[in-house]
Figure 1 (tube, helix red, strand yellow):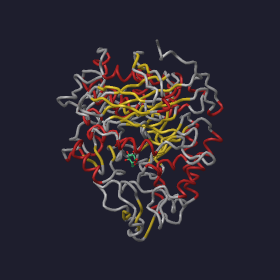
Figure 2 (tube, rainbow, N blue to C red; figure 1 turned 90 degrees about the horizontal axis):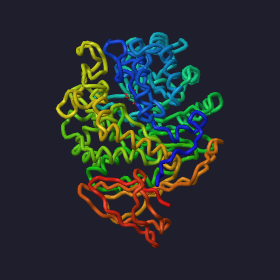
Figure 3 (spheres, rainbow, N blue to C red; figure 1 turned 45 degrees about the vertical axis):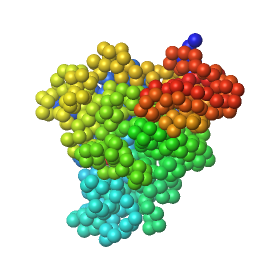
Figure 4 (tube, rainbow, N blue to C red; figure 1 turned 180 degrees about the horizontal axis):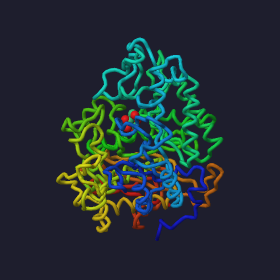
Length: 569
Ligand code: BGC
């Protein structure tokens, strides 16, 4: 019996809500492949690996900033929104990337930091020199650095104020992040126009959407804390209206590291939509908490809270990305527990978070890598992978800040891990050579050669997910279990969804997902009166499982840190 038979679906290119069933992959151009031997990854390199990404099952790339930049914040310090840093390539090569990705039915989403620019940006240079000129009001200037004391500092490792003194203009400017990244002044309508022009410029180049970087921080006010202020939401609504009108099918993804209820606000409402997607910051740290606490309750609470979002909106689920694993939106007690488990060496911390990659966080334990990926691919929303995590790449905590987990992709056991032909000393960052994660054995080539490698496992699970629309389009109901270590939820898809005007000619499906966080084998009884009598089959191999009894009760035994995805019929 097979439950993975291909379903006839319109291609993603015909589906205005393609993002709801897409698998995303965050790829830092600088870190992926160096095609010209200068020691830095580039667009040509990324283009040369599109076949690999297609093989893996990736539907959409998320490309962090490649604009001209002094690279003091990994490119999030933009010096010119309309050009590409020469070491990364040219606009023509970017067009080629988009074309070649589209040929493979793959989307390209770029990162857009709109809250701030680099202090090297021409707008800032003009603003500081000519307060009365056209850019005089483009940034947030003040005669005092004492305004808005309630606005928190994000980069606590490097900054002790959100204000910096500019000796040229002899005023303070506001910066949410580094002091070389002045915040744009969204109170100024000319800033809106300039930003809309940048958005159109990239949409005209063919990008399929944007990750709206640091989006909660656009406006500040005397009353609020500068996070998700009402005019910020008004601005996002206006941007969405423009995108929907002139570029339908392109997607806006919110990076809003906020408390659960506040993240959901970035979706807007059905009548006044804001972003199509928002990263699921609430759920992410709770996955890691569950692994070590061996308790599912934090996940149960957050999953029960974050389900109510407008139709067509979707979460972006992730385990790791190019930033620290942020612990800003958790309680102090919880944060200390996380530091104790995952950042026992102070070198592993950055700001209010942990600057490690997935595999080292999990001590390279295969069961945990599988369990976390199984959650990533079955929680409501679309999964976002971080480059290299599919092979369990390591990190380098002796590198500064978040560079620890931005090292070159490990392709082969050859020089520079096959990333670059440059002299090893010339690489933008050294390749990982640690005992456990050395590129000599952790690399794509060797994992391709081992049928049971993590890479093959991740690829397989991606393909199983993609064969079942319920994971992308279904809703979720968290079920009651009698074991604190066990999380059970059911994903339900009614079938023949008419979202966005597209009709899928497909069947309803119900999948029961069960995860055990216990560090030993356990049994758990799951109660779901609505599933009384349901028969269960394993989604991977079709194996028959015990059915729910007539009262809707089911007892399962689970191996250490294991999971099931069971088709219920
Ligand atoms: C990006 C970071 C960056 C910050 C400031 C973020 O939200 O993800 O990598 O440092 O914006 O630019």
